[in-house]
Image (cartoon, rainbow, N blue to C red; front, top):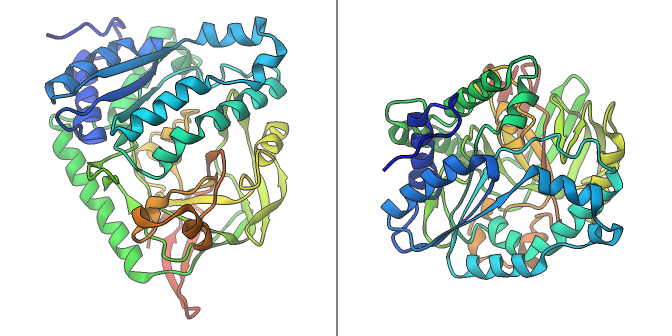
Length: 416
């Protein structure tokens, strides 16, 4: 049985293929495994298709939780001030327990990225921090890659109008849907085979990087002269990889990156963003920061500087790096020329770094390391993990070997 998309500008066949990709490639759901799914209410057509594919794959129970933009805004309009320092701890404790019981995690993004742009930044920051603290027990299961998880996207109307402001709503939705399907390979006759080939190509990149065992990466370009030390025992990852529960999955659909863990105390120099960062309703543009001993000591932005400052002051680890990722300028998402206002897509258009929490899977034998061992090897800990783009067709990257030798990695934004 199939359902109409309920949005006439979205191709129902491609939407169905996207749902299939989410279950068979994103999660690689196993028979008997439960699924915890979150989505904006606008994405209900995709939620229904995902449920079908999940149950066809032998899912135990699929449990969806839907959010709604108007409900979110109601809190900022009418909520008591004290409510912005609270979060549904009971829910996140249950989610953490579900993850502990091997429930797979699937998130659909699609809300208006500028939804909170007109709300009080202090309240947005307080609510975000409360949510991050409450979510920490569940986030640790995700960051530790304990389970198979996946994020995909649905072209919500308000998001589509943000990306294509000059188009009529239905046209904007259709254009964003086509961009999502193309980036997610759901526009291809056999998207599963296309993803298998793409994963193989990303794995070849990670093998090359891991064979060199670089001590650091040196990024140079306009406004950028940055040395990113790499964590001791770091491991490059990309495409599909195995979670601690033994299931090989693709956490992000789409993905064009290979990534690893920087050393939280060995980053120095300056770096400038090459694309705006859309963060909780604020567009933060022209970010420029300076690192000393791994920590950001100076930070400016031409837009959204106040929000950036609040992000950097979240906790002890929020001024240090948890991820460095390499993406060629020729990636399909970069070549689309679109700013998606959504990190899931924008991070796959350019090399990027992430403030905050590191991924334990980006260490050799990471599954066996304790949090204390990860920290000793240079892994960062934080309530946040926020990616921002530093790559372009003007960026060069050298890999620095342990003995100080230099190996070209990127030239003018492309693999060397």
